[in-house]
Image (cartoon, rainbow, N blue to C red):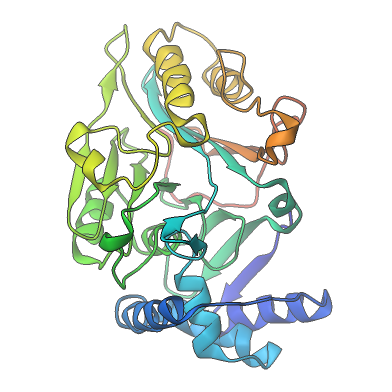
Length: 348
C-alpha cells in the first residue's frame, strides 16, 4: 500500500495527489456508457451540493493531470454502484467482512477488504489533515473516497458493498464517498446516522459506524430507505456487530440485486458472528486478528483460481488509540501498527 500524507485545503490536497499520479505516470482508462455518464454527472452535482470539499479535491487532481473534470468526477461517482454493469446485471466483485465489538469496557473495530488482487498494488492508506475538519486515516483501493477509516475523535466509518436492484440506483453519493464524508464531518455514531439521513444515497450498501464511547450501528442503506441495525450481545452480555456483503435484516433483502451469499458473504458472516458470540477473556487485538486471519473459520481463505483475495486487514483498538494493519492477506501477512494519526481524545 502507498501511504500518502495530504494536508491543507481540499484543492491543495487534490493537487498533491495529482502530482503523485503524474510522477508515477498513472493512467486512468475511463470508459463510461451513456447511462453511467448521465448518472455520474448528476451524482457529481449532488456531491458538489452536499460535500463541496470532495469536488474541490477532485478538481485539484484533474487540473494537475489536465483531464476532463466532469468525466473524471462521473467515473468516481459510479464506483461501488454502477461502474460495471453488463446485460442488465451488476458485475462488480467485492467482498469485505466488518465487525465491531466491546470487550472489557474497550471498543474495537476490524475489517478484511476483499477485492481482485490487482487492486493491492494501487491501494492506499492516506493520512488526511484537511483544514478546519477532522484529521483521519482513510484506507482505500481508490483515492479521495474509501472503504474504511478512523478519525482523530475515535470515530470509525466503514462500508460493505451490496449488489443493488438496478432499477433502484439513483443519482446520489456512493458508499465510498459516504465513508469519506462521515470521517471528515462526524464525531460519533449519532452524528453519523443523522448525516446519512440527510444525504442522497446512490445505491445499496452497509455503512458501519463505531465510536470511542462504545456505540455502534450498521446502517443498511438504499436510495429508498435506511434501516439501522443494532448490535447483538455475546455470552458476556457485551455488544458486537457484523456486516458483510448482504443486508442482514430480512426487511431490507428486497433491495438486494444479487445472491445473498455473494463472495461467500453468509459464510463469512457466520464465522465472525460465532467467534464474537463466544468471545472469552483474551487479548482483544489478537482475537480480532485471529478472526480476520481465518483461525475461527472461513474469512480470507479464497482459492487462488477465484482471482479474489483479502488485500488488506485492519484492527482499530479505538479506546487505546491504536491502529493495526496487515497489507496483504492476513493468513501470511503480519499486522503492523500505524502511528501516524494523533488522537485528540483521552483513553477512558
